[in-house]
Length: 219
Ligand SMILES: *[C@@H]1O[C@H](CO)[C@@H](O)[C@H](O)[C@H]1NC(C)=O
Ligand SMILES: *[C@@H]1O[C@H](CO)[C@@H](O)[C@H](O)[C@H]1NC(C)=O
Image (tube, rainbow, N blue to C red; front, side, top):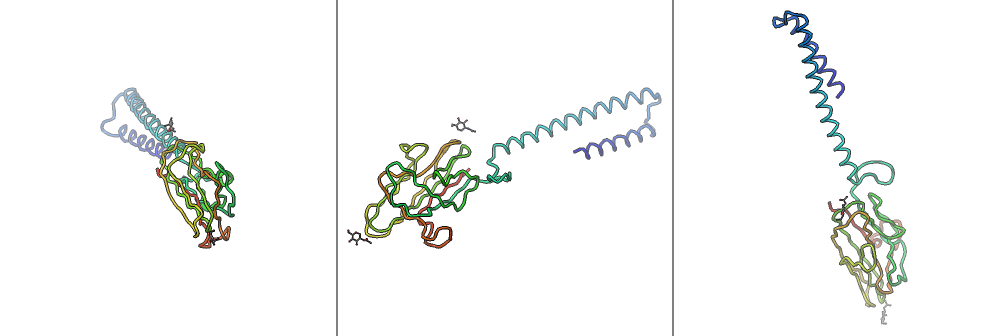
């Protein structure tokens, strides 16, 4: 920008030189000076308008960046679409009524909106979000678990259940939700439940991830 202004100023001063030395040069030196001052003033106003325009544009770009979800918790300011995926590092033998299901083994957590200590995803901005849950249990166990928003009574339409069947069970479902910034989404036990966790925690063994919770911002 500065370089551009200097360049324009240089061209303008050369042009003045040419005008003054050329055929169209005003005879009276005072007229010539006045002419230059008027021209200079017009040019300065144009440049000022341009600078104001660019300043406005720059601050609108900066404020649109403020609205985006930036940073990944490590201090870097790269734009990152909030998304997470977590499984359970252990078998949950007893999940009491209204107790949160905590998926503690984080596989992905862009934007760090998911808390592996509380099992909650907190919407960082207003928007449409997609969530997925899969739960597994060995034969003759049971679970009744639903996804809730903010409080345990606020069901969002995802309910997974299995009752003492003689086989391994794996259940999955998903929901798409409109959330406000700060809304918390988590899984809650409705009755006493069991949930199978990873067999080989911390690996990518195919028998892992058999119970998991994931989600992301759609727009
Ligand atoms: C988010 O949505 C709520 C409720 O619809 C609204 O009051 C609020 O202004 C919105 N916030 C932003 C940042 O758009
Ligand atoms: C499940 O329960 C049934 C009935 O009690 C029993 O016959 C079966 O052996 C059990 N299965 C397992 C794998 O424990």
